[in-house]
Length: 241
Image (tube, rainbow, N blue to C red; front, top):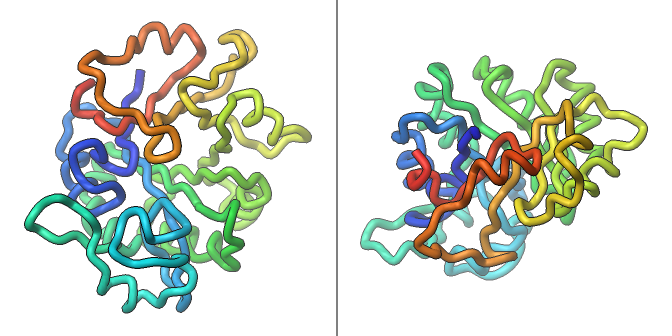
């Protein structure tokens, strides 16, 4: 079972921050880091999960209604003395690039199924290509047409479709999109392992939508493999490595 860090080491550190990514990159045996991108009012790629900034910062409103400079003035809730800010995608790559050039991968989720961010695909593909990191990046989204666009921009890009149920992931791919990776919620594996044969299945644990607190026991990775899951995207990857 391959282990991924969900928004960095997000159980112990504030999600989608340079601190959470730094801690994840230090883990030996980690396959990769998952993160989320949105676009600012002035067209910058920033790393934040929610379309709104209310849950994770002291601000109120939509990411798309703020300029980068305005977002950078906001503090992320950390519970620590050290303040974290919303990072740009460039800042994250500056931090992770040395590890990405070794073995680490990065799963970039485009948060464009609620807010239609015009030009998001072009911006992220251009940035990844300029860094020469095409083989280290996986693009994922709930929006199949966005993956089609990335495929046109970067024919060899690694792509994955997101949804809650694994059957809905497959349904989105009807007609064929050249995608062989599914990203479902780990508790929504409603197809058999045989039905998922040939697909990479990277299942995710939830953040705020389905709050999952530490239980003191670890997931049975063997049992998850028997359900067809090949990779698991965890809030606390350090507990499994």
